[in-house]
Length: 270
Image (cartoon, rainbow, N blue to C red; front, side, top):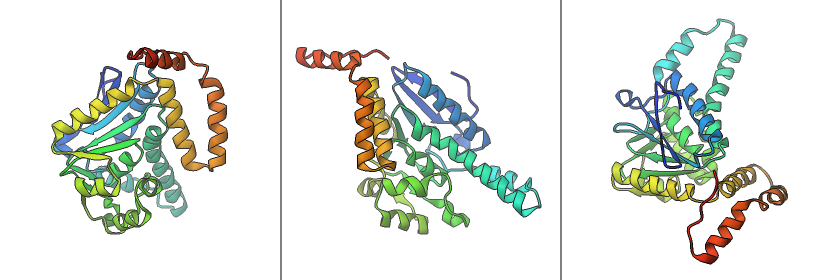
C-alpha cells in the first residue's frame, strides 16, 4: 500500500478500512483525494487478501464534499473560448465521476460508515457504495442546489435506485438536511448507531462477517446485482446462468457444503 496525502488505509484482517483524512478541512475532497481514491480502490479490487472495504471519515465528520478551493482553481484556469471551455469542464466532470465509478465497479463490497456532515460530493460517494450506515446525528444534504448547480458525480443517477423518486427529488431540489433517523426511515442508510465508536464497531463487525464468506460467491453476487440494476430481468437471468456455469465448479461450493454438514466454520481461499 502507498502512503496517501488525503487517505488513511489499513487492512484489518480481510477488511480494508479507508479513512478520508483531512479533518481540519472537514474532509473536503481536494484534487489529491480524487486521484488517490482511484488508486486505493484499484488496490482493493486487485488484492485477493482484501474481501471487503469500509470507508469512513477521520475527525468529527465524514466529509463536506468537494473542496471549493479546487473549484475556484479550476475555473480560474479556463480557456476563454466557450467551446474549449465547455469541453474542458466536461472532461473534468468525467474524471471526477470515475473516482466514484471505481467504487461502484469494485468487485468487493464497499460499506460507508457516516458520522457528522455528509454533504454534496460525499452523497455522490456513498451512493456508489454497496451499503450505508450512520450515527443518529449524522447530517446529509445534496448541497449542490445551493451552489447554483446540479449534482454531477453520481447522486442523481444512483440515489433514485436507493430511495424513492419523490424523496430524491425533494432532497435534490431543496438541499435540506436529513439526520440519521430520517436517513434510515427513507432507506438512505441501512441502520444507525448512537455514536461514532458504536458505528465503527458495528460496521467493522459486519464487514468481517462478509469477508468470512466465499469471496467468489460475494463477487458474483455483487456483479449480478450491478448487472440487474442496469438490465432487464431476462438479461440478468441469462447472465447469472452463464456466470454460474463456471463459478459452481469452484472448490468454495464444496467447502461450504461440507462445513454446513459438519457444523464447522468454512475457510475459503482468497
